[in-house]
Every structure is written in structure tokens, then in C-alpha cells.
Length: 188
Image (tube, rainbow, N blue to C red):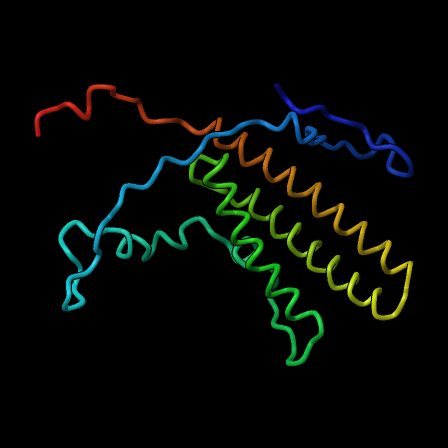
């Protein structure tokens, strides 16, 4: 099932075309990541790697393979000391990391690519600004700011649904290795 293509309305009518995200109950199921086998102890008592240890060693260059600064971070600049938004941005960074990990394991077949990761980063920032503006609105009794906070929260929700759908569609389109049902019974 391909997503519906919708022509924009209002001032962008006819000029803009967008892909509409499916409703929550119609999102693709995706592909779950294969379970990780227990690696046991990675290191010996003296701190050297045990035979067969691969988890920590493999993280080296592959940990950053295929990542870009725009998908790995929420911003390219640092916030000045004492900035009111700084704790919200830090929380957004954690949210992005957890959400991408969740998407990878639940629908992405172990991968959350750069496009869904970018969408999650935007959703995380929208959520952070939503929470920040909500707190400011509560302190100042500013109803207009509270409405903006709610709109940003809704924007975050929509982006998260889009990221889920894209991650699932990417996983479904990825080639899968052939499954050998007798592989576990082969002579060792």
C-alpha cells in the first residue's frame, strides 16, 4: 500500500504536493530487529578482550558509519551557559536517541536510517520547545504561548508518526538474508 499523495490547499494550492502519513492504526508493522545473542563477558579479569568478544570492538568505526552531524545531533551550535532552553534541548537529545533506538528495534529491522532519524530529531526539538513554552506560559499566564506549545506538541506527534512509517517502509524494502531452517542442526 503506497501512501496517498495530497495536493496542498490554501496559499500553496497547486504548487505543493506532500505525502500524507497514515493514521496510527494504519501504520506499517515494519520489521523487528533480530534478538541479540548474549555475548557473555567481553573482557578478561586483566581488562583484555576475551576470545570471541566483538560488541565493544565492533563499535569502533562502525558506530559512526552512515551518520551525519545533522542526524546525530540536534544542533550544530552550543547554547551559552545559563540558557533557559538548555535543559530542554538536552532532554530532547536523550529523547531522540531513545526514540531512534526504539524505532530501530521495533519496526526498522535493527536500523533507523538517516531520514527517519532526522524526522525524529525535528520531532524532539518541537517537543522540547513545546515543553519549554508550556512552562513559560504557566509562569506568565500567557494563553497564546500555551496554544503555541500545544501546536508544537502536535507537530512533534505527527513527525513521530511519519518517522515510524518511513522507518518501517525502509525496513520492508531492505534485502533480507536467506533463511536456512537447518542451519542450527549442521555439524559443528
